[in-house]
Length: 187
Ligand code: DGI
Ligand code: FE
Ligand code: FE
Ligand code: FE
Image (cartoon, rainbow, N blue to C red; front, side):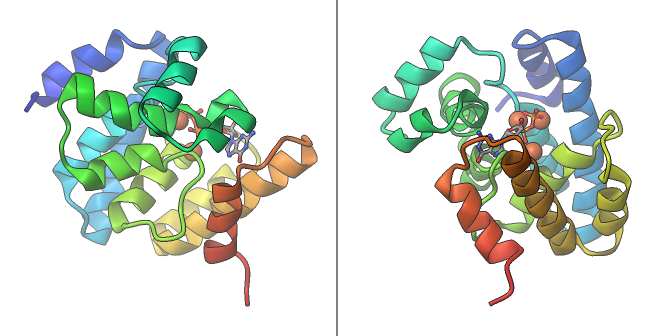
């Protein structure tokens, strides 16, 4: 397996300096949350470093990979912002030789979440939302919740993301609605 230093170099080459700083922020918060809630610190670090690995890949390449890797073809109908999680998990396996399925799931699900997120998946989903470089209305509320109750932070982030998508009249990927129904909706 690659060392952290090797992963850092490989990830840095895939993205702008700004996004790389976001990735480092996600790693810092993910490690803190892993410590607090008892997830693997090493897994949190690796998943955080790789979570946006595919974010700046060529759209045509991602499109073709969704088809050739037998990913959910519905992805193609809901906007390219949701591609880099599932595509990133494939590339992490192929290019970075990541084998840990929990790490791959954390990468795969970091944008839209999923109904049954493991502790590590919750850590990455939330860390991506609250890392120190994030600045939007509600981020401080999300940071506060993350310190007291990780599941509440997942719920808050999911509700806000859905509200945002509706406000912008963006298409909502069905799996994002599953996440909402499990983590936010009561009954
Ligand atoms: O990659 P990051 O910017 O760090 O963050 P992310 O992977 O959480 O991506 C957030 C973006 O994804 C944000 O612009 C909203 C978008 N998104 C999340 N769920 C959906 C979605 N976009 C559409 N169209 N549909 C969704 O269900
Ligand atoms: Fe992302
Ligand atoms: Fe996110
Ligand atoms: Fe991110």
